[in-house]
Image (cartoon, rainbow, N blue to C red; front, side):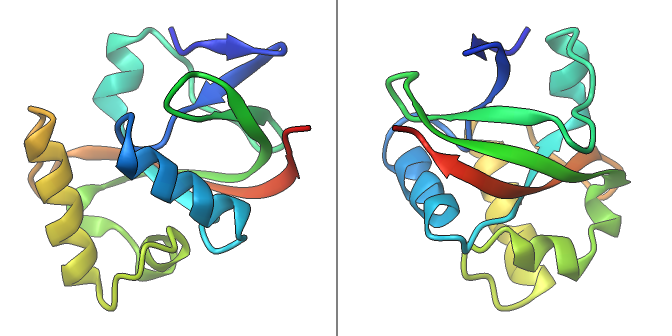
Length: 133
């Protein structure tokens, strides 16, 4: 199961360390309003999908809440069918869908979960509700 913080499920972007801190900074700056996960991780963790209106605690590398975000959309798709609108909303500076795919493929390879065009994904859209106090 995902961690729970202040009664909310947690959102931990990327991997702990520099990547997570960079992604969290993008959320706090309002530039990152989407993220993508592997459906297989939900199955492994016996975790249900997020739902529109659900609030999540955005965690830093130490497990501390840095903000609250609210889910504004949830979509199931495959790696090969990811939409540019979603990819660009991730706010990570990708200039094309090919660039997004290359970067995400590299990330998932690095954590031992290679993907192909048929890999099932969960696309989350969200909005920043408030930074943590």
